[in-house]
Amino acid sequence: MLPRSNPRVVIAGGGLAGLACAKLLAEAGLPVTVLESQAYLGGRASTFLDQDGEWVEQGLHLFLGAYSQFRALLRDIGRPPREVLYWTDDLRFETPGGPSALFGTNPLYAPLRTLLGALGNNDYLGPLAKLSLLPLLAPAALPEALLRRFDRLTVVDWWRRASGSQQALERALRPFCRAIQFTDAEQFSAYNLLGWAHQTLIRPLRARLGGYRGARDSQIFAPLAAWLKQRGVEIRTKVALDEIGYDAQTGEITGFKLVGGELLKADVYVIALPAWVFAPKIPTPLRDRPFFADILDLPTAPAISVQLWFDRKVTRRDGFTMVAGSNCPVYQDQSRHTYPYAQGSRISVIVSPADPLMNWDDAAIVAHVRADLGAANPQIAAAKVVKQVVLKHEHHLVRPLPGAMTRRPSQVTPVENLFLAGDWTQQEFFGSQEGAVRGGNACARAVLRAVNRGLWT
Ligand SMILES: Cc1cc2nc3c(=O)[nH]c(=O)nc-3n(C[C@H](O)[C@H](O)[C@H](O)COP(=O)(O)OP(=O)(O)OC[C@H]3O[C@@H](n4cnc5c(N)ncnc54)[C@H](O)[C@@H]3O)c2cc1C
Image 1 (cartoon, rainbow, N blue to C red):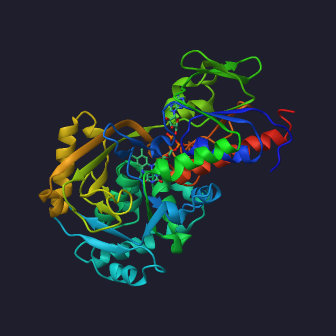
Image 2: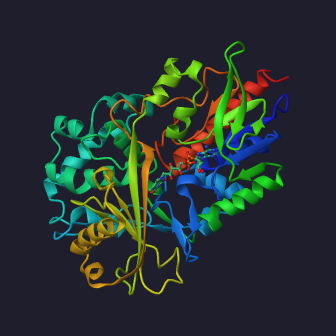
């Protein structure tokens, strides 16, 4: 889409949403500035070097095969997904002190594992529990617009109404809820869960899980920044948005005031910050308007990310392992493909729900993680931890409480020159990397539509 004019755009936030938005606007020829408060790009998906010179990630990231706009972005910037990612076609489930199971996920790439996984593993998930999953996934075949009706129900309410098996809830659905949006099944909107099932169901051959072939900074964010700079995008790091200027007379945003006092003026202002960072900055005269009041009300979930370096290999797996009956619902050994130079295993694990552990000190959190994972995998219990990193994030996603997902705002706001990007804006992939890219792309398209309506000629 070629714009009718070239208004100057400033984007606050250099995560996936802000960068995806900058990319589409730069391709359309608009002058764009991106402001990022950290020294590095990527936000919640970022990786950074710690004081030992080791790459650390904000949190373990799975790349689902169904992610299409994120793949397209990677291809466009000359980082084809096959170079950035490695694919796995199975998912292992463990329980502390209980049975484990391996399920194939893809009928095309792993037909035998998928068939045998579904027919076997009966000590993990009995035949009735497996059968209860089949007809209950039928709602996931509904179009997105109809799925939104399920936003009123929690996963547990919906599962009870559908007479689903308790074993399937505990061994399959609950760890999934905890892993994918840091929230337990009693609080988790059924729309969100069915939305993920829907995306997989409509692309069964894409039912794969991707892991990264290296730190995301070198795999994605550094090449993306170089690509953007070549196309004239100005990227300013270590620059934080402080206040948003608003003129109640004209009903327009008048500028971004930065920490340190600089006032940045543009024609179009994009917020690609997390919702909870944006909320306190919403200009006072706008706070009572329903659109912005809904943003102030969005609930958030904390997350704890733990990375452990071991003195030896503790798994032989390339893929991801879900842990049922634990608040360490998913982990991955990154010493095979992501950081293959590591001598022993490098386990990255999410602690979720993290709420009860937020006041614990790092040593207590690591002891808890080791106890749970060690009870599920004896090799972890036997090995020595040689380095540990614990990252506690008080807010890390919009929590999918019933009603919250349908209340997410659109990228277009009632203020003509203010637009929103971010994984918390309306799109079909909720809080995820794909959701962030989709939010950023939808925001850029909305800006271009406004430009073409002649708003800035
Ligand atoms: C622990 C964890 C695990 C996850 N696991 C997965 C997963 O397995 N798969 C998956 O697909 N997704 C996962 N996600 C979700 C995914 O990381 C996010 O949905 C996505 O990165 C959000 O991108 P964003 O651009 O919307 O927001 P952000 O990445 O939060 O970007 C916002 C940017 O704004 C910057 N900023 C903040 N304040 C200011 C300010 N005042 N001025 C300027 N800049 C500012 C921030 O530093 C940040 O760079 C996970 C997230 C977390 C936290």
